[in-house]
Length: 281
Image (cartoon, rainbow, N blue to C red; front, side, top):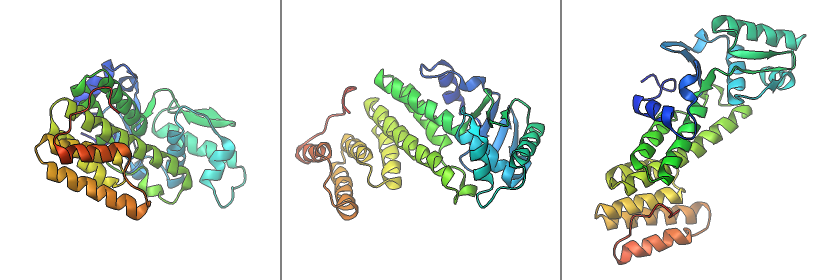
């Protein structure tokens, strides 16, 4: 697949019928935030300098992060010229917008002197990932385990890379990065839980281990890893996972694992842990 711009076929089909939102398939334009900024329409893609100048790319990234909301002219100017605005800043912004519209389409960016926003037909990979995570969680709650796994996999595939690495030093990018981390964590948890309930502990273990490797303090992922190991008749491996978590929590935060994590540890130590029911957090 073209990373960040097109959903895997299975996830795309799922989203057309998924209960949280079916709008993804109706968006003509897509902006990629995760990885190098890019824009696509159908089978065509613009990358890097093809999108526009560095300042034009910053403007498009800003509007995409605030997708659906009008970004005021004051905020745009402050973001594009943090050390001091030029003369006639609104005119300079209007020129950047005109160039982006000329490259893509007039309805990609709408607005005027009060501010600008993306058009209704413009989506982005971070919002798509959020909708896939919501779909996965809804399917899990309905005990539809395979659709939950497919939607979570689609979200994780979109979120493989950091948001806007070319703008790593810009504080206004941090909310997008924080959102990606939160969504990725939810997708990992949902996928591992769905795989366990579907009787696929190998898939659950792979997902849980990816989550704990990326975020060693993630207790929910550790519990999923422990349950998957126990389901695979590898209780010693489950106990080792618990010990790693306990050591990291003690070292970094000075706290013990949560009671639910300790209870699971004792259950595995004494015998067998049950796969959680649909109502178990």
